[in-house]
Length: 412
Image 1 (cartoon, rainbow, N blue to C red):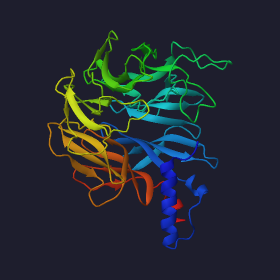
Image 2 (image 1 turned 180 degrees about the horizontal axis):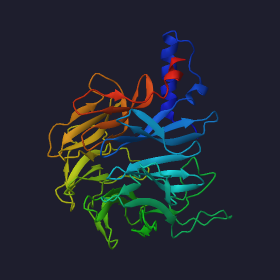
Image 3 (image 1 turned 90 degrees about the vertical axis):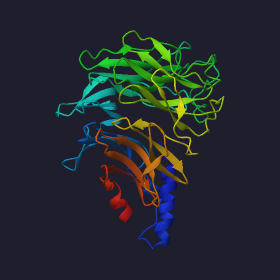
Image 4 (image 1 turned 45 degrees about the horizontal axis):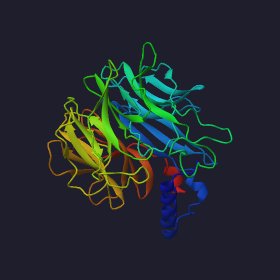
């Protein structure tokens, strides 16, 4: 895998700055492969731990992602698993005692759970994806409110059958290839993303959706009775892109529609009391599957889909995934503005949004971020002088940088 374009650009820009300042040595392409960065960030609900991922590359450009856990009280960090283990999508259980993730455990890959009592990680089930081009797939893991079950998204065979290797191939769908870059080497695997649920006792997966659509972007309700998800259910979803928000019932697998617009909805999130839903959405009456460039804004609605209103209308910039504060009074979201990505918050009842980090006058881009119930904030921040590092900020206190992944490299 090649380094992300943003990381290459950051390395080149910093190289120019170092040379201009008379640094010891300029940056090279090989140096870019030495850069490490913080990816996902997840605060445990009780605020005692922070799970985060670290992306690194070897000399051949092959990337790895591993999960680390920061102990807030001790001020120390420990890697989850051994040198050969890899993990992504760390998600805390509501009781903060278990961490679900996708990755490799020993010789198996899929969904795993790590208890915080130092027992070995538990492998639950295999999880597979799809090479079908999807603009956004949101959350692929979600815990039940009782911390005993996990919903997850995995690929299942579609009605067209698996990717064929025969010659000639019979093409029956519009999006027959995953992307232009992969068109010469492979075709659409025809897998559909379906929602499954598994409990930690029986470890027996149970499907909640079984259809021909791509279902993803999960959010388990606080009451525990249903799961929000996003799906494109147009008559020909290969040709017409239109995400809408749905909910699937846990008991019977019945699906109800919460939005029915010609624009696109993304990334739903329940309010703590289950009475409201925040989400991203566009306004155009039609969004092509090949161009989804309209800026997304934050919206809120009632749990039954009524009372829809735009919360982020006062900011004419692209906005990121919304999340509620623990008391339900605030909704946090990122905003792209003038080369930076800032974290904002707005009162759920409405009002003028305010900047949280980085504050006005400071440069930087917030990546992944997460809130504890106390209001403490953990986030990954990229600055003009450093790749993404882990920061934490308690209510009313200045931010603190917790990791120093690239200090030795930058000093050279």
